[in-house]
Amino acid sequence: MTTIAIVYHSGYGHTAVVAEAVAEGVTRAGATPKLLKIENAGQDFAAFIEEVTKADAVIFGAPTYMGDISAPLKAFFEASAGTWMKQGWKDKIAAGFTNGLTFAGDKNHALTSIFILAMQHGMIWVGSGQALGNVNGNTSAAPEAVNRMGYSIGVVTQSDNAGPDVTPPSGDRESARQLGERVAKVAAKFAA
Ligand SMILES: Cc1cc2nc3c(=O)[nH]c(=O)nc-3n(C[C@H](O)[C@H](O)[C@H](O)COP(=O)(O)O)c2cc1C
Image (cartoon, rainbow, N blue to C red):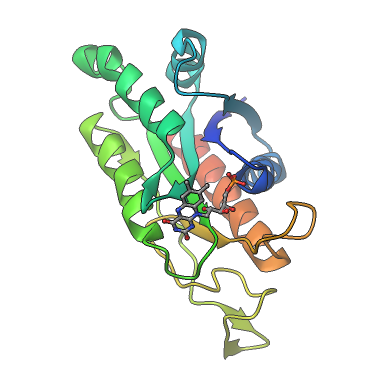
């Protein structure tokens, strides 16, 4: 069985919703998601690092805070330096997502931070694989459009200043599901 680790932080629950949608996509592809929620930057990451090492692929996610990934995911990345020394995650499939309040919000920088971590580890990056937002054949940034913000290196979602029960919208959640599904399918092919 293909296992996909989803390592994420969420301060206020919005990125958690996105992570859960990614997990649904993994399940949709017939693989097993392993949701690993980082609570704070000071926690012991040994068990999470072990889970990532065992998984066929890993998807990292964090909210964009001050134009970059939130500090708890960064702390996890720094804790992975020992694994980097051993090249323990080399050739593992990796992907990423971030969520922010604004449409731009320097979220590209947060996603790039995740990408660089994956490249440092010698991992194999899987992008969103999603065309521009589209509703009924027309390019669209409507809330129901998948990839309404037009990102390719990963999935970027946007949540309003409201509860995670209502935001991010349906298109963003489906975008996240499709990322999980894609990574799971690539990981299964790679394992074969
Ligand atoms: C300290 C802090 C910094 C933030 N910086 C940004 C930012 O640079 N760009 C952005 O689009 N949103 C920014 N936001 C908004 C969050 O990304 C947004 O509220 C997101 O939904 C939070 O996700 P979470 O509920 O998973 O913590 C920031 C929020 C906080 C608390």
